[in-house]
Image (cartoon, rainbow, N blue to C red; front, top):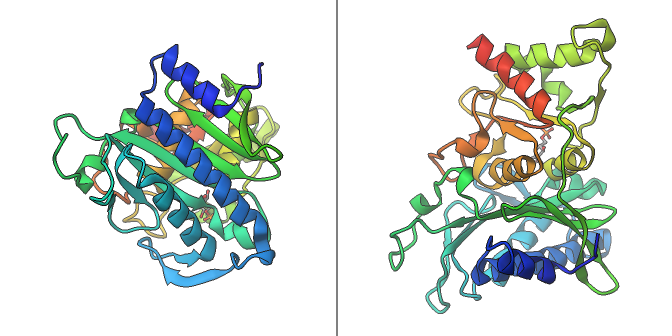
Length: 337
Ligand code: P6P
């Protein structure tokens, strides 16, 4: 595969495939540049004043890490002036951030989890930035943008991606025409296409779940995982391996790279919550990427991308990855209904 730059990839997607507009190309380039800036802060570790808690809570009631706030500010400051966005939404902010009047407004909405997996920051495990791009609803041109404009199903995403800050810094992106991966060439500071047309194997022997929650799961998840653990002695007739990095970006990246199934299901510890992960800026972008790589993503009962959001910070149960495993785990839910 020819190693082209992110810019050339996006120009080709715009010129040949008609998948993206000049505004969307600019948006993705700016987000990609922001991720390079975040990568620099992340890699400073103890050498920069970036580790540890910020001693503040976010809208989710979670203690914020200093890097959560740094990453959020980088994305806001980089994206507000370009004229490609009408507003932004972040895991770290309660309400939407409308582009200030001193800047031109564009037709896109950008949502992000600026630093996902931040519990891993202080132990130097891979973390990441997840982003999702929506368009302002038709007919809302010229009207003030509102939170309701963000409440669109994941099928409406114009683009989705993540950046993983790991041994390599990589940007993973879909504009609706398959999944491409760019590796950061640190000598040139350039995103370089290293993988394209990702395909997740339909079958797998690897599952990812936080087993410490096992006693809290609903019966369909208990059954699915118990069968995986039974291996060759059980109904699956094959042994499984388990991985859990507790950083969605890292677990999803492994699944994109070699297959697997990831589950963060509803559990009875907080029964009023559909799940731990957030729909708009974690599950939706990851589900679009997974589906674009021939995988599947459900909440146990329906396709995640079809869920019509009720609230900006809505949570959702997530089962995603190798298609046949997602379908099996989902069938256990619908059969139990
Ligand atoms: P637990 C990180 O905080 C996150 O939102 C996801 O990245 C990750 O998959 C999950 O939570 C880990 O949750 O309960 O295992 O710490």
